[in-house]
Image 1 (cartoon, rainbow over the protein chains, first blue to last red):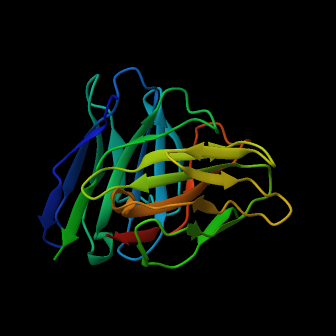
Image 2: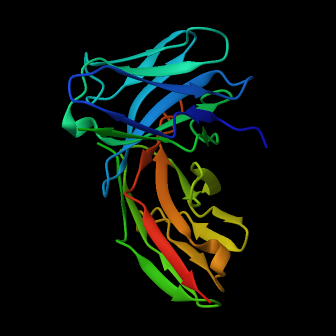
Length: 115
Length: 114
């Protein structure tokens, strides 16, 4: 089965630094997503992306966050100035058509630790 | 807003035991309901889904029935195996929401002992 790949698997950074999390969605998928899970809490939706623009974003996705599809294969999440509370597992996902009953394909996540 | 609540984990069972993981939801519309599973070191993957009331989703011996009257989607398996050890996530997608956004519960860790 095709896979979503995420790099790196672990990222450690200092508070205030910028980080970029990278994802390669499945090649014929049109919708891309970022989710995060703070330890012990729910998996939370951050943002969805379609046709080179943000389709929907949550309250968490403030001005410190941005997403980009810099080329035909990568999908990135940038956190401009990291805070301690940004420490979480970040999951990238993609779907073919973005339909409500459609399966999402997830990557294995990037564990971000902000010190 | 829409939300999903799962039973707290971790759940520890012996091999061949019966499994139930409770999931209830709150939604203003008529959501599609999902169970995703995350095996150690891997991403979340779809286990089963149901898109309307009274539908039963099933896969790999797991089942869940969409109960609109109790707003529930409990996951069951008659006889668990060690290989079922994983984290299980209940989720919903609002059918009126084009874009496929999922709302998840907090996940329930299952550990099956031989």
